[in-house]
Amino acid sequence: MAYDADLNEAPATLRAKLPSTRWLVRGSEWVQLEPALERQPDEPLIEKQRASAFFGTSLLSQLVARGVDTTIIAGCSTSGCIRATAEGCFNNGFRAVVVREAVGDRSPSAHQANLFDIDARYADVVSLDHALDYLVSLRSVGSPV
Image 1: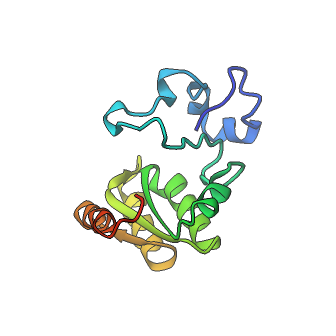
Image 2: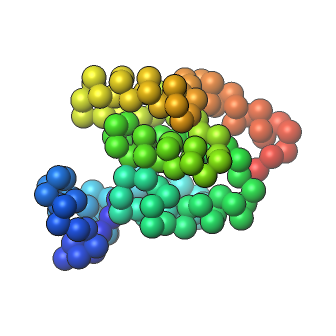
C-alpha cells in the first residue's frame, strides 16, 4: 500500500482506523519491495491503496490479459489484505492459493482463524513446499510462471 505525501489518497476513515497509514508514503522506505524478492524488471508491480489488491488497481485486467487462472498470495495481514485479496480472486473466478509460511498478522489468533476461514471459503491454504512444487511443475510443462 502506498499513498501521496499529503495522504489525500487515504480517506479519513482509513487514517483513523490505521494510523500507521501516515508512514506509507510513496517512495519511502516503508513501501519499498523487499530486495530478497529479487523482482525482475519485466514483472508488474501493483501499488494498492486498500486491503484487496483488486480494489482500484489494474490487477484484474492484467490477470485476464495474461490468461491467468490461478494466483498465489503472500504478504502481510492475513485478516485484512490477504483475506480481501483471496475474496477478490474468488469473486472474479480465479483459483487462489495462500502460502501459509508467506503470510502473517499482528494477532496470532486472527491469523489462525483467518487461515482456517480462507481455506474453507475462498482459497487453498498450502505449505511453502507445496507452492514451490506447483511452480516447478509449471516450468516443466513450459507454462509461464
